[in-house]
Length: 202
Image 1 (cartoon, helix red, strand yellow):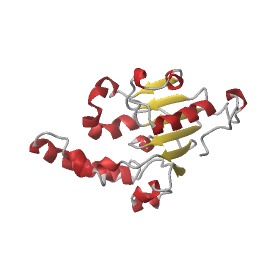
Image 2 (image 1 turned 180 degrees about the vertical axis):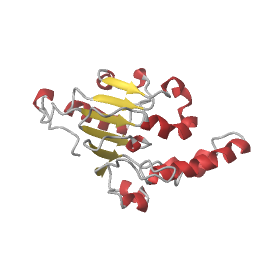
Image 3 (image 1 turned 30 degrees about the vertical axis):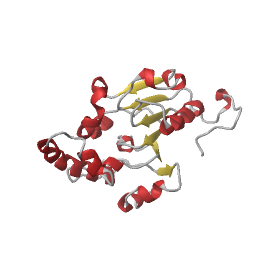
């Protein structure tokens, strides 16, 4: 995996350490495979600022906690994060990334939809597409208690699938800045990414 530095490498010897880098991770509410990838990015770019939708310091590793983590305005509601899906694109697009040379979106949610400047290089590392909007959508919908909640969620889900397909296309506008390069962490992940996303570089 290209994000893992060589065994025994010191942080201060890694090339590109003067580049202003911003990893954008979907959320930091546990320590799983996606967070291991983020740790590798942290080792490569020790001065990088981390942007994330939700952040619970006690649930992530000391390495991640030692970095400057910038959560979104939704963070006070992190205990209810699964129900905040309709607001996640808005929160993702609210990050101010203008000063960064490189943005690395660590993606299994809406992270790749961040707005970057035309001079910023945006790389997306896709752990998996937003399956709760695609093949797992019926299971996600069943988590809502009432029929009214499920019916209310349907138009939001349609909008979110459109937003996901076009890296933020909404309301008839062309996407501002999509990732220039996308990588997947296992061979089966590209098969889960919708074909229309594949045309954009997946």
